[in-house]
Image 1 (spheres, chains in turn yellow, purple):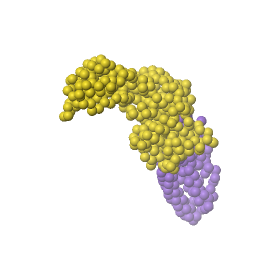
Image 2 (cartoon, rainbow over the protein chains, first blue to last red):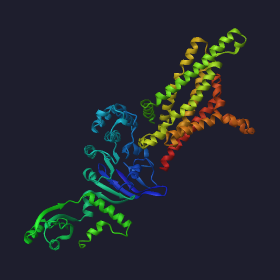
Image 3 (cartoon, each protein chain N blue to C red):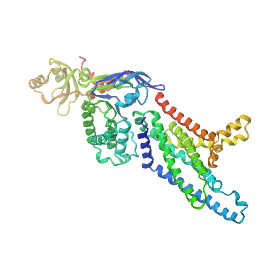
Image 4 (tube, rainbow over the protein chains, first blue to last red):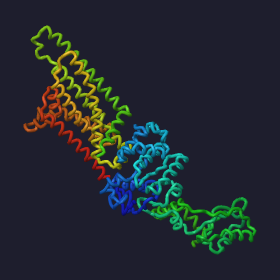
Length: 334
Length: 255
């Protein structure tokens, strides 16, 4: 549904994105992640036909965004980052205007606008001036204008920024409900959001794509080991030695301690699919160490993202090691 | 071409914001005052001339009331119309709504025409408000309808030119005040460029004279419809609109 190939955009001497390539299948929700200023909005502006790329090509719904822009524009719904709305219009007339401009036939327009307002939970605000709406409601009006023509592709730039937690949950639910019938590409820098809403992600940093694929696969790729967090009261070095000796354990890392009660915290990494919790318990029992906690740690997209972005930054400033590296030096490399 | 929804939206924006009301009120207030002063003066002079029929031979409504009125009103328009057109593109740029507008399936031309027509409509309403004055005149005296109609046609053409220049200026900047100032400067220059004609050498003086708005706006009020004058307004209007379209398209290429 969306194919981007070697997309490059330069603002004068500044390169905003470089050689960006990715594809989104129909009906998929894809998260577009990256730190601030990574090039997310630039990519979305190109996809929505607002600005041309300097190089490369992008196709949306089978049409080139530059040469067949009108065809693309007929098939997309776009929500820019800062949600620009006509603040001097009322909600219902505004949505009616968007529906008309986007070619919703006159006979269906009223019903369609009512439907969309209902779906975005703004029906009770329909007679208000947009100027007087709160940020959360404006965001929903923005989303409503994006979906009012029932487009094939939705391009949402930071759809949940500046909302309160309840509104975020509502908007997420709404976006999730759009999957299947619409192809959605949404950018964000809030990572839990992506894990909750998206099927797969594209991670962009400093204008280049650094990772892409389904979230589960990315997590496995970047964290090939399973992790267990353990808290044990016992002689620190001996505990470290003992746990390391358990077959299947690839790495043990001391995290904190010893505390005043003599306990220490460790992270135990083992090959994926190999559960070492039983052995750790038995070891502690044998040695008469007190086992206070034994907890599997699920690696999330957040860790993947931090690893990628921190890694990139580390490469950029190669001289001094980051704190993350110092910590891992405690344990021997697998 | 989806001109209609754009047109409707722009008109709605004029009327849900205070712009339309303030412009209409200001214009009609000042226009009414001008009409009152000019007509009072006419009444007084016609009384004086009633004593001396010889002098009153040349006194008529067209020359003594309507022509000066139209002349004065065009100066007001020179000041007011830049304020009507300044919003059209500048505000969309400042608030970022242009990002949505230009990603909707409408051609730049349709956006342009829709916006232009909405400004013309507001202008039409301003002009329609002044129709009260000839109506009042007709109650007391004999109005020559031909020159009156011609005067209004000239008025419309002149407003169309002012608004087209304003639309172009508005497409250049995201600052409404800058847009209004550019418009005002361009129009004022066009207005007074004829002054330089007195000192310019041979071929240039006629060119400068012809470029001046001043040279073209009085003939209509006299009741003369000259293609030279009509073409002057139409040419400049089309040129300004064409430049606006170019400036819209340029941002698509440059990004």
